[in-house]
Each structure stands twice: as C-alpha cells, then as structure tokens.
Image (cartoon, rainbow, N blue to C red; front, side, top):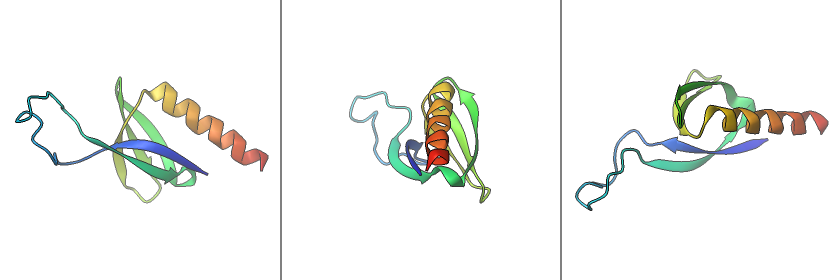
Length: 81
C-alpha cells in the first residue's frame, strides 16, 4: 500500500521574499510505500519526521495525529487483503 505525503525540500528553489511572500518551507507531494516506513516522530505541531527502514528520513507536513491515523487505517486495510 502507498501513502501520499508532503515532503519538505532541503533547499529553497525560489526566493519567496523577493516575490513579497513569507514562505518558510517548500513542500512537494510524494508517494511512499507504507511497508518502508519504520516510524514517525513528532517534531512540531505541523511538521513531523518520517523514518524509513533503510535508515533515511524526511520532514513531512501534517499533524502527528492525522499521519498516525492515516497509517493505522491503511495498515488495517492491508491486513484485510
């Protein structure tokens, strides 16, 4: 099964301040296999850290509760197959 997440980009690709916008973080949408996710750790209210079994990690957008509930829901669906 797959989950779509918003991954924070490491470097800024646009100069938002030059455009008059106060954008602190840029995100891109990515699909991730839930079988590859080791765990999610809460960082701040709307940004979490997702760790993978291959020892890599990324910052993702969303509340811990929303992400946890989505992963648990997808895991339960996968067990029914």
